[in-house]
Length: 198
Ligand code: HEC
Image (cartoon, rainbow, N blue to C red; front, side, top):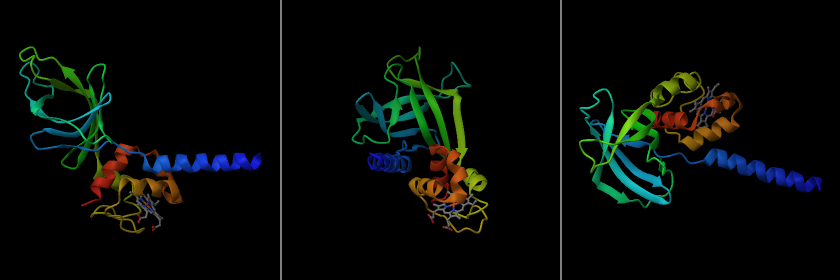
Protein backbone atom coordinates (compact mmCIF):
# COMPACT_ATOMS: atom_id res chain seq x y z
CA UNK A 1 0.00 0.00 0.00
CA UNK A 2 2.79 2.37 1.00
CA UNK A 3 4.68 1.45 -2.13
CA UNK A 4 1.65 2.06 -4.30
CA UNK A 5 1.10 5.56 -2.91
CA UNK A 6 4.79 6.29 -3.33
CA UNK A 7 4.62 5.27 -7.00
CA UNK A 8 1.40 7.23 -7.50
CA UNK A 9 2.95 10.24 -5.83
CA UNK A 10 5.95 10.00 -8.12
CA UNK A 11 3.77 9.76 -11.23
CA UNK A 12 1.70 12.77 -10.15
CA UNK A 13 4.88 14.69 -9.34
CA UNK A 14 6.51 13.96 -12.68
CA UNK A 15 3.30 14.81 -14.58
CA UNK A 16 2.93 18.13 -12.77
CA UNK A 17 6.58 18.93 -13.42
CA UNK A 18 6.27 18.14 -17.15
CA UNK A 19 3.06 20.17 -17.43
CA UNK A 20 4.71 23.05 -15.64
CA UNK A 21 7.76 23.03 -17.89
CA UNK A 22 5.95 22.45 -21.18
CA UNK A 23 2.73 24.36 -20.65
CA UNK A 24 1.86 26.22 -23.81
CA UNK A 25 1.58 29.96 -24.10
CA UNK A 26 -0.36 31.88 -26.68
CA UNK A 27 1.86 32.95 -29.56
CA UNK A 28 2.94 36.55 -29.55
CA UNK A 29 0.84 38.55 -31.99
CA UNK A 30 2.98 40.69 -34.32
CA UNK A 31 2.16 44.38 -34.39
CA UNK A 32 3.63 46.40 -37.27
CA UNK A 33 4.61 50.07 -37.29
CA UNK A 34 1.10 51.10 -38.39
CA UNK A 35 -0.18 49.17 -35.33
CA UNK A 36 -1.90 46.52 -37.45
CA UNK A 37 -2.13 43.20 -35.65
CA UNK A 38 -1.69 39.86 -37.33
CA UNK A 39 -3.64 37.26 -35.34
CA UNK A 40 -2.40 33.94 -36.71
CA UNK A 41 -4.71 31.89 -34.57
CA UNK A 42 -7.73 32.75 -32.48
CA UNK A 43 -10.24 30.52 -30.80
CA UNK A 44 -13.95 31.21 -30.58
CA UNK A 45 -15.72 28.26 -28.98
CA UNK A 46 -14.64 25.29 -31.08
CA UNK A 47 -13.78 27.37 -34.15
CA UNK A 48 -10.36 28.76 -35.07
CA UNK A 49 -9.80 31.86 -37.13
CA UNK A 50 -6.91 33.78 -38.59
CA UNK A 51 -7.32 37.52 -39.23
CA UNK A 52 -5.73 40.94 -39.06
CA UNK A 53 -6.90 44.02 -37.26
CA UNK A 54 -6.16 47.45 -38.70
CA UNK A 55 -5.84 50.55 -36.60
CA UNK A 56 -8.99 52.64 -36.88
CA UNK A 57 -9.00 56.36 -36.22
CA UNK A 58 -12.14 57.01 -34.30
CA UNK A 59 -13.05 60.69 -34.66
CA UNK A 60 -15.66 60.16 -31.91
CA UNK A 61 -12.91 59.34 -29.39
CA UNK A 62 -9.48 60.64 -30.32
CA UNK A 63 -7.88 59.51 -27.06
CA UNK A 64 -8.86 55.86 -27.51
CA UNK A 65 -7.23 53.14 -29.59
CA UNK A 66 -9.49 51.21 -31.95
CA UNK A 67 -9.05 48.43 -34.46
CA UNK A 68 -11.18 47.27 -37.35
CA UNK A 69 -11.38 43.72 -38.60
CA UNK A 70 -9.90 43.37 -42.08
CA UNK A 71 -12.57 41.05 -43.51
CA UNK A 72 -10.40 40.13 -46.50
CA UNK A 73 -7.86 38.59 -44.10
CA UNK A 74 -10.40 36.42 -42.27
CA UNK A 75 -9.79 32.72 -42.73
CA UNK A 76 -10.70 29.56 -40.90
CA UNK A 77 -7.55 28.66 -39.02
CA UNK A 78 -5.75 25.36 -39.21
CA UNK A 79 -3.65 25.89 -36.12
CA UNK A 80 -5.46 24.90 -32.94
CA UNK A 81 -2.83 25.40 -30.26
CA UNK A 82 -1.55 28.53 -28.55
CA UNK A 83 -4.50 30.57 -29.83
CA UNK A 84 -5.72 34.00 -28.80
CA UNK A 85 -9.04 33.61 -26.94
CA UNK A 86 -12.23 35.32 -28.09
CA UNK A 87 -14.93 35.39 -25.43
CA UNK A 88 -18.05 33.81 -27.00
CA UNK A 89 -20.39 35.79 -24.72
CA UNK A 90 -19.23 39.34 -25.52
CA UNK A 91 -16.63 38.86 -28.32
CA UNK A 92 -13.92 40.56 -26.31
CA UNK A 93 -10.43 39.45 -27.31
CA UNK A 94 -7.77 38.70 -24.72
CA UNK A 95 -4.27 39.26 -26.14
CA UNK A 96 -1.75 37.75 -23.75
CA UNK A 97 1.15 38.89 -25.87
CA UNK A 98 1.48 41.39 -28.70
CA UNK A 99 4.94 42.43 -29.79
CA UNK A 100 5.80 45.91 -30.97
CA UNK A 101 9.46 46.79 -31.49
CA UNK A 102 10.75 44.30 -28.93
CA UNK A 103 8.32 45.19 -26.15
CA UNK A 104 5.53 42.78 -25.22
CA UNK A 105 2.05 44.03 -24.38
CA UNK A 106 -0.86 42.28 -22.72
CA UNK A 107 -4.38 43.71 -23.02
CA UNK A 108 -8.03 43.16 -23.62
CA UNK A 109 -9.97 44.39 -26.65
CA UNK A 110 -13.63 45.23 -26.12
CA UNK A 111 -16.05 45.16 -29.05
CA UNK A 112 -17.08 48.63 -30.16
CA UNK A 113 -20.28 49.42 -32.03
CA UNK A 114 -19.44 52.13 -34.50
CA UNK A 115 -22.55 54.25 -35.03
CA UNK A 116 -21.18 55.42 -38.40
CA UNK A 117 -20.35 51.97 -39.69
CA UNK A 118 -22.43 49.10 -38.36
CA UNK A 119 -21.44 46.78 -41.20
CA UNK A 120 -17.88 46.37 -39.91
CA UNK A 121 -16.46 44.96 -36.70
CA UNK A 122 -14.46 47.13 -34.32
CA UNK A 123 -12.69 46.70 -31.02
CA UNK A 124 -11.42 49.20 -28.50
CA UNK A 125 -8.34 48.79 -26.31
CA UNK A 126 -9.32 48.54 -22.65
CA UNK A 127 -6.57 50.80 -21.25
CA UNK A 128 -7.09 49.49 -17.70
CA UNK A 129 -5.87 46.05 -18.80
CA UNK A 130 -2.76 47.24 -20.65
CA UNK A 131 0.56 45.90 -19.36
CA UNK A 132 3.88 46.54 -21.12
CA UNK A 133 6.90 44.29 -20.67
CA UNK A 134 10.33 44.99 -22.00
CA UNK A 135 12.18 41.70 -22.30
CA UNK A 136 15.58 43.40 -22.27
CA UNK A 137 14.79 45.21 -19.03
CA UNK A 138 13.38 42.00 -17.48
CA UNK A 139 16.58 40.18 -18.43
CA UNK A 140 18.81 42.91 -17.00
CA UNK A 141 16.79 43.01 -13.75
CA UNK A 142 16.36 39.27 -13.20
CA UNK A 143 19.20 37.52 -14.98
CA UNK A 144 21.84 40.13 -15.80
CA UNK A 145 23.71 39.85 -12.50
CA UNK A 146 24.54 36.20 -13.31
CA UNK A 147 24.41 35.93 -17.08
CA UNK A 148 25.03 37.76 -20.30
CA UNK A 149 22.85 37.16 -23.40
CA UNK A 150 22.51 38.88 -26.75
CA UNK A 151 24.62 41.79 -25.55
CA UNK A 152 22.64 42.27 -22.30
CA UNK A 153 23.70 41.68 -18.70
CA UNK A 154 27.13 41.40 -17.13
CA UNK A 155 27.17 38.27 -14.95
CA UNK A 156 29.84 35.60 -15.11
CA UNK A 157 27.67 32.45 -14.97
CA UNK A 158 27.76 32.16 -18.74
CA UNK A 159 26.15 33.50 -21.87
CA UNK A 160 22.52 32.46 -22.41
CA UNK A 161 21.87 33.84 -25.89
CA UNK A 162 19.02 32.05 -27.73
CA UNK A 163 17.26 30.15 -24.95
CA UNK A 164 13.64 29.12 -25.43
CA UNK A 165 10.91 29.69 -22.85
CA UNK A 166 10.92 25.98 -21.96
CA UNK A 167 14.70 25.98 -21.45
CA UNK A 168 14.38 28.99 -19.13
CA UNK A 169 11.47 27.40 -17.24
CA UNK A 170 13.39 24.14 -16.87
CA UNK A 171 16.40 26.05 -15.51
CA UNK A 172 14.24 27.95 -13.00
CA UNK A 173 12.67 24.67 -11.85
CA UNK A 174 15.97 22.80 -11.46
CA UNK A 175 18.86 25.20 -10.80
CA UNK A 176 18.89 26.23 -7.14
CA UNK A 177 20.30 29.78 -7.51
CA UNK A 178 17.53 30.42 -10.07
CA UNK A 179 14.63 29.13 -7.96
CA UNK A 180 13.63 32.54 -6.65
CA UNK A 181 12.77 33.47 -10.25
CA UNK A 182 9.75 31.14 -10.13
CA UNK A 183 7.66 34.26 -9.51
CA UNK A 184 8.22 35.34 -13.14
CA UNK A 185 5.03 34.91 -15.15
CA UNK A 186 4.81 33.05 -18.47
CA UNK A 187 4.46 36.29 -20.47
CA UNK A 188 7.54 37.68 -18.71
CA UNK A 189 9.60 34.60 -19.54
CA UNK A 190 8.38 34.82 -23.13
CA UNK A 191 9.52 38.45 -23.31
CA UNK A 192 12.94 37.49 -21.90
CA UNK A 193 13.34 34.62 -24.38
CA UNK A 194 12.53 36.97 -27.28
CA UNK A 195 14.96 39.61 -26.04
CA UNK A 196 17.89 37.19 -25.77
CA UNK A 197 17.22 35.55 -29.13
CA UNK A 198 18.73 37.62 -31.95
C1 HEC B 1 21.84 33.94 -9.02
C2 HEC B 1 22.41 33.69 -10.31
C3 HEC B 1 21.52 33.39 -11.48
C4 HEC B 1 20.45 34.13 -11.93
C5 HEC B 1 19.86 35.39 -11.33
C6 HEC B 1 19.99 33.49 -13.14
N1 HEC B 1 20.74 32.37 -13.40
FE1 HEC B 1 20.52 31.13 -14.98
N2 HEC B 1 21.93 29.89 -14.20
C7 HEC B 1 22.69 30.14 -13.08
C8 HEC B 1 23.54 29.01 -12.81
C9 HEC B 1 24.53 28.89 -11.65
C10 HEC B 1 23.25 28.04 -13.81
C11 HEC B 1 23.80 26.64 -13.97
C12 HEC B 1 25.25 26.51 -14.10
C13 HEC B 1 25.75 26.94 -15.40
O1 HEC B 1 25.24 26.43 -16.44
O2 HEC B 1 26.66 27.77 -15.44
C14 HEC B 1 22.24 28.65 -14.68
C15 HEC B 1 21.69 28.01 -15.78
C16 HEC B 1 20.80 28.60 -16.66
C17 HEC B 1 20.23 27.95 -17.82
C18 HEC B 1 20.44 26.48 -18.22
C19 HEC B 1 21.70 26.22 -18.91
C20 HEC B 1 21.74 26.64 -20.34
O3 HEC B 1 22.84 26.96 -20.79
O4 HEC B 1 20.71 26.65 -21.05
C21 HEC B 1 19.45 28.87 -18.44
C22 HEC B 1 18.62 28.67 -19.69
C23 HEC B 1 19.50 30.08 -17.65
N3 HEC B 1 20.33 29.89 -16.58
C24 HEC B 1 18.83 31.25 -17.96
C25 HEC B 1 18.61 32.26 -17.03
C26 HEC B 1 17.66 33.34 -17.23
C27 HEC B 1 16.87 33.59 -18.50
C28 HEC B 1 17.65 34.05 -16.08
C29 HEC B 1 16.74 35.19 -15.72
C30 HEC B 1 15.32 34.94 -15.83
C31 HEC B 1 18.63 33.46 -15.17
N4 HEC B 1 19.17 32.37 -15.79
C32 HEC B 1 18.94 33.94 -13.93
C33 HEC B 1 22.65 31.30 -12.31
C34 HEC B 1 21.69 32.29 -12.42
